[in-house]
Length: 364
Ligand code: PMP
Image (cartoon, rainbow, N blue to C red; front, side, top):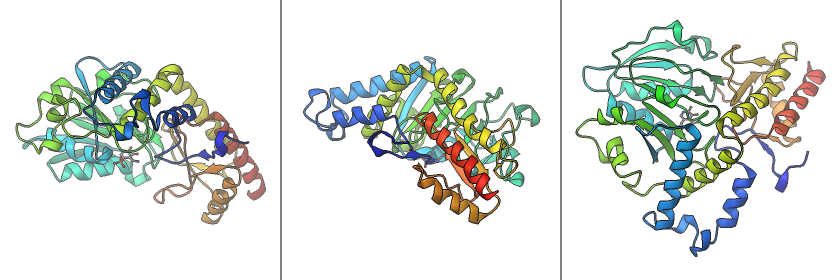
């Protein structure tokens, strides 16, 4: 199946495929953005056109996620990984403890960073079963007096996702790097949400932080300026040079999503995409084994294994001849990972499912 511009079906875990319409718009704007005589890449972040881009990008994200007024939206740098450190540095004070729910490799990394700062309490750790589950929130006890509770809504490497919001009286903090904007979320359940741009929002380079005013106010009196949420909020993400190009690209992606039904429609598309692949796994009589247990299956990263490493390598190589690119799983899970973020087309999932069925028939 031929794709516009001879593009492949790009299953990369991020950076990843973006809507073609967005890339076309960026291309049209590249040399002279809206008659400014320059590219957004060349524009001062203090200029009026960029101020407008930033304001519109924030407004569109607020509208997509229905973000209440008592939350600030920040566009920071340093990736989601910097948030692993900024969160405890700002909100895990001496004498306090923070709850961590660890359902995969990214939650583990967040925990490691917090352990360098203060006391943590691991309320759930799925390592023993190689992180194949997003457990029910009722199955463990959260500390109501915790400084905060941290979890990862979608574990990108393992392909396990929480599709509900936990409820707790402690401030709830979530790494939504790989599923933000993939479905509606009740923002008011959260004190802080963070997400790297490079999956559902745009190219790499920006991290979106949505933070409630009461948590912001709890930040320490003294903090390194660049790590201080309060300072970034006070300066509306312009304390230092923001990632201008990525913000502009996120803005185009947000407008595209607003024009294509918002997060409700994106959830419908993502569910249909994921089910197309999960069906092929389930119909293979055990040739393919899904990594995530039922109920925890991610609609963003579908992970599964084949009977041997040799067959896995052959699968990846043969898939490439069908324009199916980037399917090799992360080494910690092995097998295959099909990352199908918001912009991934259903046709790519159908071609993959068809290829999987043929491959299993030939090699099973
Ligand atoms: N959290 C999750 C869930 C991720 O998927 C990733 C990156 N794949 C990160 C954190 C780290 O993001 P970054 O590379 O932007 O620091």
